[in-house]
Amino acid sequence: MDERIQRMVCSRSRDLVRPSQRRIFTFFVSVPREVPLGEYEILFGIEAQYLPVESYMDQARQTQWTEPLVFHVKHPFTGKKVFISHSTEDIQIVRELEKRLDNYGIQAVIAEDVPQPGKVLEEKFKSKINESTIFLALLTEDSVRSKWVIMETEYARQIRKPMIPLKEKNLRYDSPIEWIEFSKYDNPDVIFQRVMGAISTIQPSISPMGVILGIGILAFLASLMFGD
Image (cartoon, rainbow, N blue to C red; front, side, top):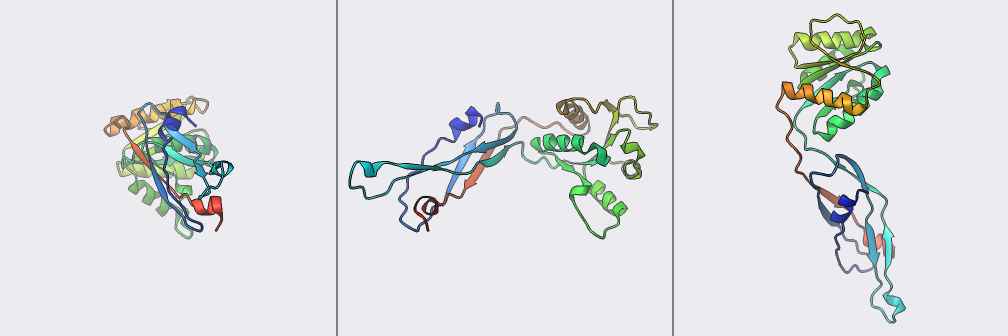
């Protein structure tokens, strides 16, 4: 765990728990701006002492650690939704983009993540594009051979959806739309920064984060330390 986070969660709470009782505690963690965005794991130590004590040895405390709890340091949701049109061959690039967009409060809309059995695929894609605020086309050697990517891109252009075409270098693709070049071999952060740069020209940029995360922890002390 990042030491900067570790220092902030070192809080203590004392409470008397009788046999078969349970206590629920809520911890609030204030995250400074300099902490990198992403996922963090926290372990909570539950320290118990049997009372009443009759000798010095009885005063020894026992500590039991919880399983790692994962929380996400990220910007609050901005309301922006980016539909990513892509080939299944490029899903790794899409997942990296999805993770980084989420860190900045932007939802990546990936059609296959929203199963709708029985729905006509064309209607489904059009509906998801309509619901999105930005359309991003990942144009690669694989995707330009996909009828769905071409159909989605053309539909987004027809309805004048704000669009970000990412075109792979050296790909021959005729389009009246200005694109941004990238390489599959670029670092995911490089591709993400190009996408964010394009988003900032479409909509106001995202302000720096000042976020307070509330982490609700269910600490069942009696069950952990004394049994039911």
